[in-house]
Image 1 (tube, rainbow, N blue to C red):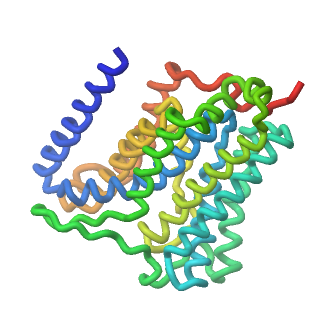
Image 2 (image 1 turned 180 degrees about the horizontal axis):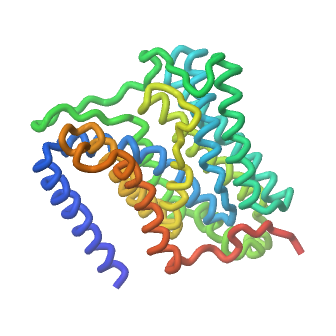
Length: 330
């Protein structure tokens, strides 16, 4: 029955997307640009959501994704300017994200801290620290525009409908979901990660250090979220503002809840949220359409969709038994 439902969704989902794109053409909205923007909006969500799926499978909750997005966005731009290349900035964003993830992991595992509070603390710290860093590094509050040459170049694909631009980081985000799914459900490492979230005492008896395994997933989650944070200024927006993440860390958490900790479903959910954000952006810049619908209502689309999906799917999901509980060896 479950396979039948999945097969139906694989048919219904693309069909609904095609129908929606056709309807949008009637309002003079170009579907190719919409999908391009939707994939850009999907990328940071997918990276963070896939990392968090792995992390929560191991029993650790990181709701500080918003904070990681903010901090790595700023730090990646700084290092991109130091190295003179956006690719190095993105890599440094991943490294800094991994370090932040590891720090949260240490606090959660060895420190036995309340993981929700630790993650919220990171988000609050990041909100203030980003504004300080913008002033300390560039002496300008709230915004920083860097040279266009630092942007990570997109792959140009020529199609009959026009030119389609695809970021290599988007390809990496999609690939990471498939790799994560394979690791979790087809490898010994995946069995150990899932056991750490369900019955950590079992792998402890088998000689596996539960806390070290959880530190590994925390660092991996931080790395992927850090790449997502660096992606926003260096491969999407072309600049920094103090609220650059705009709640995307929480939207990524909504994708995690929707997926039930399945990386492929998290990727699908991220595309849904990204498509909604892309639709909002596209409508806002389309003459005629933006006059018919108030600007602020259009901008609310991704966030309304987040609330609806959380309300619809949160109750029916089963999460690991030891999720959020520090392991205490007896």
